[in-house]
Length: 466
Image (cartoon, rainbow, N blue to C red; front, side):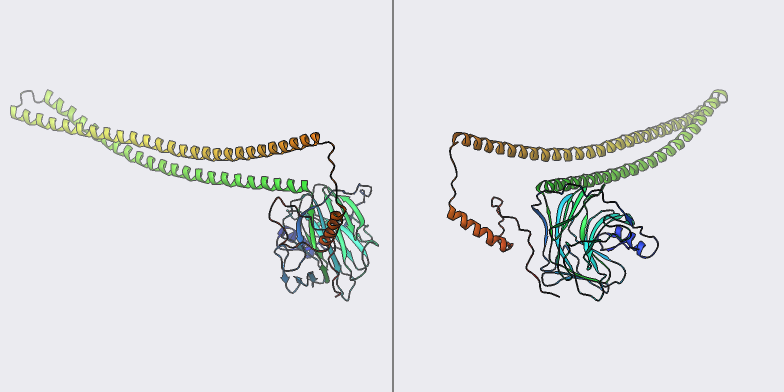
């Protein structure tokens, strides 16, 4: 039974799946995949764009620095020393550098340290999927054997070897014990080519895989060292990765702006709802007051009718003073009724005014939201217009320079450049010196017009034996 690796904190999804395998709640089924890609054409791209350069000369933010009871991973004398102390499970050491390239080249070295057992294994893990359900592992042991396996969900599938040998394949390309193996992994999804010590090992295809993380896989109870870890890509792949990153960032920014606008609209909607509730309460109070006024008017109207009937039917020959008193009382009641009717009208006008103000507030909030969205759209359109104008000017400038160059070449067809042999020999010696001497950070020019040669992919000086 082969157990899946335990990954570091950056890949919690894989940790959950593989720890479940280690604890016995699920079983890893190791399947052998027939090697159908042996007749593939090797990847022949020019990987000349440096993406990650790590020589482990000091503690780096790209690699974990662990000193625990089960793990010891530290830079030591320009090497990355790795010691997995756990006796039964491996461990995946993943770099924090984010890889979004689908076409890349990994160059690294690994060697196994001296121990009492020959069951040590070490290798490179790459294309670790973001969801933690996929990865590819190339590993080797002290018996000059290698194994390639693929993690799919909670299961390992062998790409090399067969089930009887657990995927292990004997290879003379691997170095002897306690010596470095130079591992060269070339990826142009879906194709992957693997070389060891400049000798071709195997080529295969992985469908439906996306760019992912990478690092080292250290077997249980294993000591190992690495001299360097380089990642290269092609110019086209670098540009494509940058465009994908920019597109992702733009999408995130647009989503953030949309979320912010949605939050503001929700707040304004809540304010409108509160205003509507206040208006409803005011309307309810006014309706209650109007109902009371109607009841009072009805009572006064009934009293007036009763007084008129009393005057017409009973007080036919009433005393003039009594009639005057009654008339004055009736006048006072009429005046009181008029005041009550005026108060009712005031309440009606107040209700109408409240309704008008509510509509104005609702329109003002909507105008504010629309105006803000239009301003943001104008800013985005201006930025896109400026970028488009800059690209057009750059393209026109390049076309103009090319036209002038062609024109000059047509007008000087017989001009031939002569090379001074002494200068050529001096140049060769300078190139040889630069090849043998790594370029330091101080020698790299910050001026964009100055071109510097790329670092040469060579092994560093031989290290002292353990």
